[in-house]
Length: 416
Image (cartoon, rainbow, N blue to C red):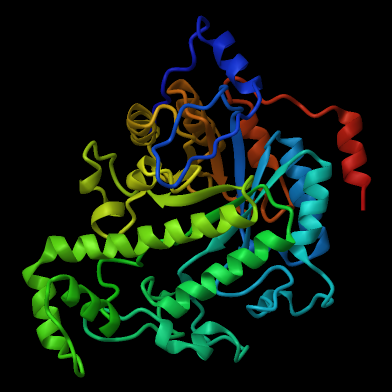
């Protein structure tokens, strides 16, 4: 049984409302300095993750904006790179196969940006950074990196390289060609589209079982003072990393962190006003010692370190716990550690009732969180067909959402 956390007290409610209505301060941290307090209390980010399956038609795009404004969201995290493909016009990656039935001139991202801006919504482009394929069938396009550059793909501890048909196809985060390609994709997006932010997902290893390619093993050996001048002896290299497990974990974390730093530098040079955020791992119970967390210890994602070093402007922990008490423990713990940093807590709406989702949002507000993001738009609207979930959720939010005037909603619904 899930019990709700106490609601905001009557004494604190005016303060909570005041915080919600204040403007979003500029939050831009230098990559070589810790984050500093914002000049003003930021406005609450009320976000929703829009999975790429929603972007396959003009009508689907239009309904995203209608539902988002109707339910008083202010930020859309729009997945435009799902599996090494493009839900926008790109010369660097193949057009998403799901768009095959649409005219070539249909640009889901451009269409959504135009409509969202008109409705007063922020748009953050959401990209899966290192996760590049998941279907059992290989990509149709020969230009897809999983086909064009299989040497970029990660290798497991037994020496098997990822390939289409496997459960998760990731690129190796230390491969320089793969990194350069990812940076080029990001730079292209930020140059050509007027977005408010860049949102990184799957900026990590798939598990502790990756990556053990020859490049990773030989680079690690060099760090340990072992020179590999000829063809690498994988057995010897594997033995070396087993001898130094902590050093090996540090090496893995550095590959991810250095990639985040490179993205940060590149994004700032092109669109400095755009916020860089990341969807980050928050599996299991909250760990007061972050080094014991799954993110840090298993998948090389030191997102506490990213906050500390100013590599991101915000994080969105995927706090997908069904229990409101467990969810609240994450919110309370992270806020206690980073009280001045923008943390937008994920809510797994697809797993819980509307009432439970609302209680989780209330828990974020109680501890002073800067925002929250629902996963996902498709789940809570049945891909735009029905917003009953959101209407029910609205009833339990504290403070409640501010309704959109009926005349404005009628105009939105009739707009084409």
